[in-house]
Length: 208
Length: 197
Ligand SMILES: [Zn+2]
Image (cartoon, rainbow over all chains, first blue to last red; front, side, top):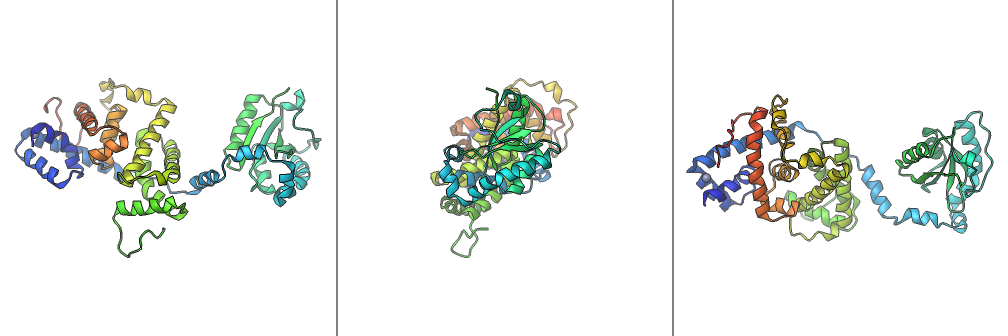
């Protein structure tokens, strides 16, 4: 084997990935080549350093929950699209949704009392016509059907939100912040909400 | 762990990977978990070295394994499963680097070598620090060889380039390291700049 070829293969001789015949040929050349022998020493130092570095590193504990959630989502294609096209008949046809709708008014009041002490229980409004005044408090959101009322309360509490109205025919809830906020701040809250996989959609309401 | 073999003998690592991947094709979550556990330490290390950030590395690792889940049936067996998975990791890692624009400085070949003088290194991180001063292309070849233990054929498949390109990049990376590493207080062997032609 010529020097140039043998020399180019030295790193893979060191990492042990050369096939037997090739490995033999490179070693035979190196045994009679001062330059390759010297460089083999340098490359062994590199390999040793790499192994010491690897030995000093630890990977984080394995947690399959995140990726399993993502796989679960794959199993339900275009879930957000589907939610936007959910009809009232669909809602009524599904017992859990029916229960959710029936309880939502109670939740709105309870959540408001719990999360916004002293706040007046809000009137229910249609989703399409927020006033300029209250639009500064509102965020629209769609939640996973698996979300329980207790989980919803906790979720909203973490962002200092309360239920304002909903769900709409399309399953959309309107949430209210405890004080008027700009779109940017409410976008940040919506983004924080969406970190939770059970929040399928969230965005601030803009005044019309 | 999922049952991956009908016989009682323990398959070799590559065989086990392949057996698990076949089960993943059948949407076997348990086999996928086993495959995830087998690849997580090496993939995380590789991505963290590439991205220099543990959180991003964890996120990209999940991106990689999600592709493995989705595309398991596309694996044709032309390479080892590990080569295929690392090829996905390489592309996902580069994409993440691009997104964060952090790759710009690392694409620059003309690093300030004076900045290496006095750099705190130990035998543990000596090579890792040196690699940060290589271009992304060169660093990948060194990383996959020394940290990953891949052959040049496998690296060509991972990076998606001809074998000769791998060898050429390795040649240039070695020459560059010969200049850089003595400045980091190269342990064990004193490499002298320009001695090897
Ligand atoms: Zn030689």
